[in-house]
Length: 531
Image (cartoon, rainbow, N blue to C red):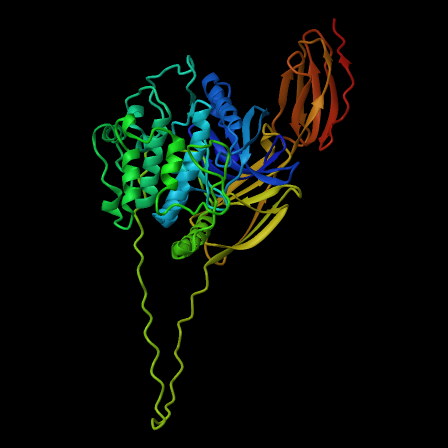
């Protein structure tokens, strides 16, 4: 379960929230304890630990993204492995394009063009490094605080250098965003990514995909054979120039598309709805592939669209926060097909006009006060949680306190409670305790104890080397046993233990060991008396 790492410390990162699940990894929000800044922490799922293919792909993604330095490409900060957990730390962004589209529906053409310029700029740098992304889609486009596109997840990226393509007939990616050549399992170049950019722009501007359905094979076949419906058929307000550009990106034959990402930047910047580049920005497109930021001010002639965009973004962000912030910066498994949300239809609410003022000759009348219905009080239950003083408490995967917490909680079918010792290693099973409350009734008062303990390392040295070393809790509970020749230290939950050392033809040795935050009692080298 992805919740296993909540509250844990992985290297110098303390995990605070689960953000999403992908084919090979879990993504979390975490805090860099050295820099005291939030980061996105991608951790390889335990079922893939030790699998050469999965670990190789995980390391390759980190290495690929780390080599690409550009304002529109997510920055990789750290790569490592702690207690068997392989991780990649990246810059954290609050929202994905996919999540935003699900919340607020289609975007104004001005913003779609701006996002397209950011995506094309990032791909220009990747393609110049002989790297094809192969999985461009809204869930892999992050949005920074200015609303610019940040391309992420190079997990399927592949180098174009000779001899590095390997199994060229393997179909990988997300079917709704496949290029025709990708669906056929052919070799890919940068034009395949541009087709996927076209699909992404199509969906952002219309709220629909060019080809929809739950059968991934049928969708892939449509990419190969069926012409897409023009975007202006769905949204007549789109400009003719934008419609033509998107349809060119969706050409079946790569030769009929825009040749490369650099020229796509030029083509998008030349649209009538493109952002204004007169504010001292460097030339974008065919004359340069240097790093640049596309975040100009919106021209005054587009201020109504900008105002709508800002209000929509705020509403979307508030809705996202209320729903638990389950943004998914990492894609679902490649063959999973999710239906798109329908485009929301605004319903205008007309307020009645105010009554006309009374004429001087009209006698005054007494208007009785309007009796407004009293809102029903919320149905709540009082929950009090106690745990270890230093343990972090989570309610429905949200951090709410440390050591002790109480609050009135709205009645719901289930309420998830968890306590975690934050500095314990991931192998410490007693550092986490959770429970689920069901059958809650309004007015109840519940006291819940979540017992947790951290772990510390006990070090020892024993002869003969084939001796058995056993730790039995004095206060009862699970016993731990190992061989002296396998390890010379053991991680144990805090507490008092009877340390018992035995070997064939030797006198058994016993002693008491206290394990706490500082570790175990110093255990001197022990040589058993043997016959």
